[in-house]
Image (cartoon, rainbow, N blue to C red; front, side):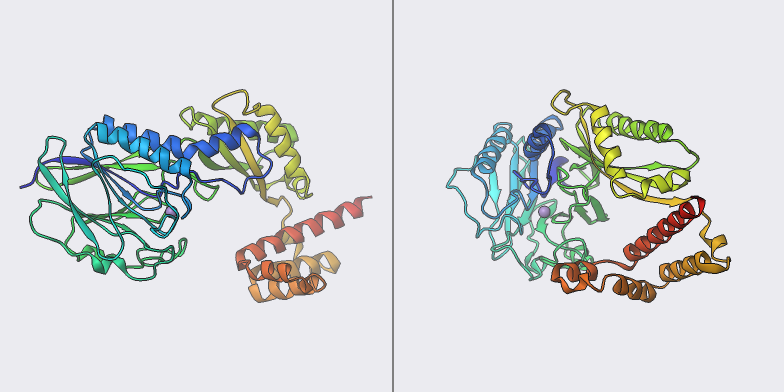
Length: 427
Ligand SMILES: [Mn+2]
């Protein structure tokens, strides 16, 4: 029998992420984002204190860049001091974004902070705040950014503690969305004898296994539109009998969201305007008072499709939506529409048109064939872009596209051609 205890599991803090990719955002948005990784970590520290955590584990990528910014290091030091002041221990490993080889300021870490080194997996005792032994914590850091060895194999369990917690920054079962660093298999982790694998690296939150638990908490603050929704850490309670229960705490300071605005069933711009505003207000209502960066998608099949085909129209809606929502300089719970993508389809029935004789029918048949057959779509594209293919960057971009993306372009081109031909007929 062990003793009950509580710990917080977080990873991928990426403190002081620069959010470089955002062109043309207002200063208020940029500044808020620049502060967001710190703000989220502050919430995490407060959560640990409020929840009565005995210790905190941080599974790598505490910093965004190997050459950590001084600001990030000083702020981390201050926040860890707060935990130390409450008697909450902290266990740290470094990952591919903050390996040991990076430049580091010479700072004293508060008592109770244990940073595991690279080489062999270290082992440390983790105590409850009342001084009783709760667990052994094991961990290993990255010496350099690109670690392709299976670090999980370097962990070995020692006898003497009621619970065994292993801290690892790595890619389990080759998740294709992330670099394949410290690759290992779930079966290896499950069979290694530890009670909880506190993982980092994959920014999506997921529980890969229970008993033993193998857990990615995800990152604590979304860093791009690819990282939408709540972000934070797990509060993990372990009972006397060794039962583990996880509860997620959303600590994100700024939310990234994606939402769809359907054009189905409407025929007037006024109605589209209302739907756009409604989508933005729903995003605001779902953010618990936090600012939102919002990507919108026009979708569905409807009469307004043709009005959206022209390249600049989505941007005009975007500009106006920003105006209606008010300046982020003026309110704290701002919503910043980041972009509007058009994924609509026309009310035109391509299948029916494909049965027609003449040029229009032939065009539609060819379009549908290309949409259904990736080889035909590629051929069509090559024909159309023969002049541009001389440019290496264009060639690279063409090669990077998926069949689905190409099919979507073919569909849009077919519909655009049909609508232009029809409008021409009417004149
Ligand atoms: Mn990371």
